[in-house]
Image (cartoon, rainbow, N blue to C red; front, side, top):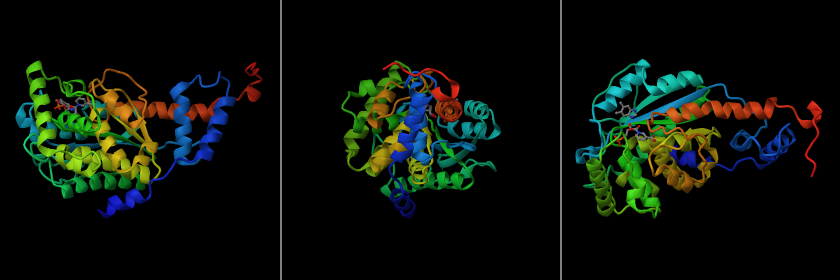
Amino acid sequence: MKLLEEALKNIGDLDEISMKKAKERLDNLTKPRGSLGILEDLAVKMAGIKRELYPKIKNKVITIMAGDHGVVEEGVSAFPQEVTPQMILNFLSGGAGINVLARHAGAKIVCVDVGTAADVFHPDLIIKKVRRGTDNISRGPAMTREEAIKAIEVGIETAWNEIDKGADILGTGDMGIGNTTPSSAILAVYSDEPLEKLVGRGTGINDERLKLKIKAINRALEINQPDPNDPIGVLSKVGGLEIGAIAGCILGAASRRIPVVIDGFISTAGAIIAAKIEPLCTNYMIASHSSEEPGHKTMLKLLGLEPMLSMRMRLGEGTGAALAFNLVEAALKIISEMATFDEAGVSGQLE
Ligand SMILES: O=C(O)c1ccc[n+]([C@@H]2O[C@H](COP(=O)([O-])O)[C@@H](O)[C@H]2O)c1
Ligand SMILES: Cc1cc2nc[nH]c2cc1C
């Protein structure tokens, strides 16, 4: 609880003065006001986070949190559970989608085992197993409250370690067969929309499995009665270990005024838990893309975030976050490198 308390103590507002200066500069650059859309919003947000007009990004890191899910025994995924450790090894040997996109972005990846069911060993794997997967949420709580806090603290510790080593932006990533089920359950706790609108096909399940998945989530909500006002309780009842670690990673980044790029459906479920624990942490979140999971748009709306990309992606791993790093860097170049109307001798707006 100590790490969590310390993180929460240090999450604050954006710097309004730097944001105002950023807006003024953007309005003086050689373009119609606001014409660079989200790139301008990003430059303003980055100024507010870093308390300076021209922050630099040198070290980008994607943190991939991995965990397993007891609810897979209900037949909710298109793939078997052993894919979780197999993909971890794929991340660490450089062959996964995230490796390619992280290399493309010039980002480092770190992979943390927060709670896989199997034993996984690799010299580069950070092993912080809170427990061997969650229990089946459709039959009882995923984990204890203490385990939920531990999972969050694994995320905080990971974020702080990377920031201490020089990371100036983080991206969230996940790996866990079955994890769209707890992510949908978390969303359902905070949304009034019917489950049919919030639950999707994850890795690509057929109609029959989709029915089983909706049923499992319904039962999970009924049996566990998660209280929306107790986000740690929600995580422990219907969540996942990697989802907790993602929430922690976001809280850890926010507590150090480090921007954190949110990936897809699972990462955004973690972001919801983080935001319900400390609403101010949304100041430090940047939404990368809109996932193909139907509930993702509702999640982003709950957080008040606008995704930058719409790529029909639904891979997770941090792939959307890695792609979006380039856009954050582009936004910083716009505010620092573009000429003003005065500098370029271009006439300003008529009225
Ligand atoms: O991030 C997303 O938007 C996303 C959407 C669908 C699936 N995934 C990935 O697929 C896995 C979960 O899918 P499932 O069907 O097993 O629940 C997990 O490893 C996620 O990283 C990720
Ligand atoms: C192969 C595979 C890769 C993944 N990456 C994230 N989730 C995944 C799920 C599967 C099945």
